[in-house]
Image 1 (tube, helix red, strand yellow):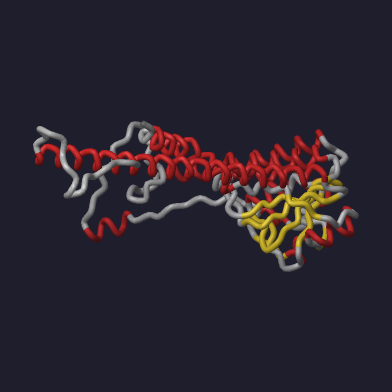
Image 2 (spheres, rainbow, N blue to C red):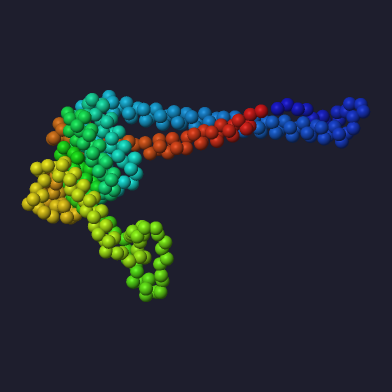
Length: 325
């Protein structure tokens, strides 16, 4: 920025009005200051964009490096984490299992896949989908066995999925089983009568409001619920019998499908698991490939960036463009 202010002793051009000259000079000064500030804002935002893109490139490089390490690893045992409630995110869980297993198969160096399970169960639909997908992948890649290693708990929907594995291992103190289906709600109709409250529910269809806790359940609706739960339970039992085959001693243990849970010790006796073990003992003693490589996607930050990346870059670039002059 360059401008010149005349000193008090410096003479003005002939015929120049003093107040007008001062106003013109002040306007020039303010204009130059404004231009300097705009330039500073422009460069500041430009460097922000450069820094953001450099950070993004760093994240992509780290992610690419981790994928490359999976592909170049020597003989190893692939590990995939299955934890939390089954069905918390349908696409995330089923897709995670499929993509992780495919990556392990395609690496060419995975001698076996261990699904490290620690879950209380969840959605029967997601569990059945995962069960079928695992069996399809096993049929496509028969040379790479799939094992489930249960940790604290592998119950209900988690065991549904585990039944698809070639073998199931657990700790003697693990919680296993819970081969059953549950559904329920509350009946507060008597409480409503006591406090003098009436329910006004408008439906088209006699069973549309089935399950509403403020409306009495009819005998027909009770039968409907029992049939639905029975059908889902039947699919669960069929999957377990398909996966476990003759290893399952259900005839000698009729309550195995009652929904009860077992310790690892009990589960081994009735054929719900094959043996005791953890990911280290199974990879070392069963697979004979003690090196563990985790194929579970660790891209929570990447997904967050991908969701907001477009909006953030657009916002910053628009801010910079608005200051270009």
